[in-house]
Image: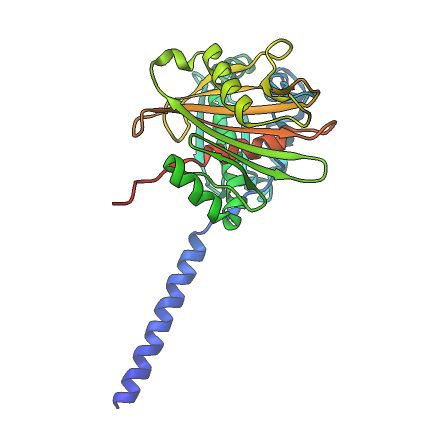
Length: 336
């Protein structure tokens, strides 16, 4: 009898565990689909895509990304009509749906995250007329791009996380007090008291991550001249060029660095600087993106930068991968 009760209890436990596992699987979202930086636009008919609505979307999302040596659009666009918006397309990671409804009093938008797949951002803009739709889109397009960019970074980090280099992550934590999702393939090229340089070198390309800190004094250090001067000082000192007397610098004449405030950086208030790096006294160069913030725990101004080198090749996607690593920043509490 006792054995029977034990067996019955075991069967019940296994059944409950299986039930819980099935429930977890049922709540798990499918992986979203779509190309890198691709946005799926859904219109009610082809005329909306070919006309003013499509033009306004293309003008914004297909604009060239600043700071790249070759012209590359910031995003890619795909298009389907509502009739063709099947379940397969509903798993796309970035969706912008268009609705013109004359019965509406004014334009409005609805949005959702990870409704069908993950990561995913869905935006539907409804308006009583084409003019109202375009005006509403123009007022809010920067926010939509920020949402879509977040999805792209999360998608890249989901790919990187299972392959993180624990030794490099621990070295960053020990020196700076925060984590970065750095995948295998990078190595520590230089490790100085307030400076770390990570490299991933292939036959024809190089992906680099630089982290450095200096004492924080005042808000003037967030101004463009100060950020450029700090970059030149720190990287010029520690990153040598391929020839004697050459060193890392910043292109300021032909592609001046573009500095903007980012509101969604994990460290809080931060400045993003995009531009072109160059090697002084040599002929190498490429794009970079850097994020600078004040660390209240240490009193330092910290910069996390990614820069890329691959002559005559497109660089938007590799730079986006480095940007995603910079956005993976997570503060770590010191061990007691």
